[in-house]
Length: 68
Length: 339
Image (cartoon, rainbow over all chains, first blue to last red):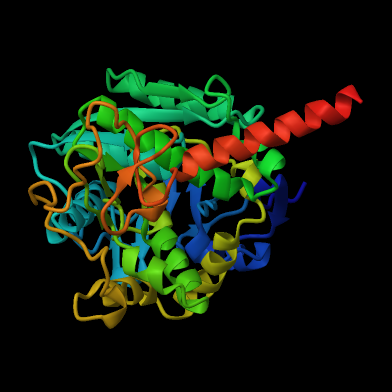
């Protein structure tokens, strides 16, 4: 079975499978998310936008935009 | 990428607007310095102030409370239960869970018990929920602060919030709103409590990163009432600009706050944080009766609200006017149902 990067966007209830390796900023572009609107986490770690993500890893893209 | 400060640890937060990237420990230092510099530059408050921190369960307000406690300020948290099904319960849970980690118990105001839950009140008066929410929250912020002898009310508005508001005010040339927009709104004589926004220099990404790295468990879901909020449109526009031109937001806002900016001229220019009670404190207001303020209209000399005695700049304060409109709408509905 082909192992891919799992990109989760919990607030949008979305999950994408993307072939790796990819930089975080490329994964955000793939997901159509602007970098200044999110933080990206892997477990208890925060990832910078140039961090390289490998196949088999799962990252969470958390929106930080609050309204009202 | 290595941390630009210690040059040893791996960076966890990259901040193009500061041409920097930090490891968690260095980011904590950076972030706290941004907040304390924001407090110092505008003289928002002093070490001896008692600060009421308005906490919603979201990242900004909990991070603000966390930083102020770490910096040694005397603080208490105020949570206002807006009466929004599900969302309010989950937010309250986060606030209490965080407060418990710091040995605190938040002050709670339940709008359902006060007879003005936001969703129903907004339906009654046919206004946007965010607008009703703002009026009601400002009322209770000041009322709880005045009753509790707090000298400062602090909210978690950040740089993104303030620049979105600024853009909206500029696009509509809201000159009176522009004159009043500032991270410090002075108080008056113990009845109008000073209001401050200590996170005015930090972005949403920065507060979210700080909260995450500190292990603060905040509500990540958006308030269901704010889905159509216009502030989100302005934020979207500004984040597009920020992506292309990092640092634009802070330049935009600091330029606006510059005292030489003619748009800042007006009755609400910031007063020094250590200012004595304003000389124009209203003699008609009885401080023993006054517990809140019509903060939306805080220009000039306030007088007592005809309905509740609170300081206001109209005949009755906006909160009393809102309550009256809700009461009438409920009466009308009851009459229709009984026919």
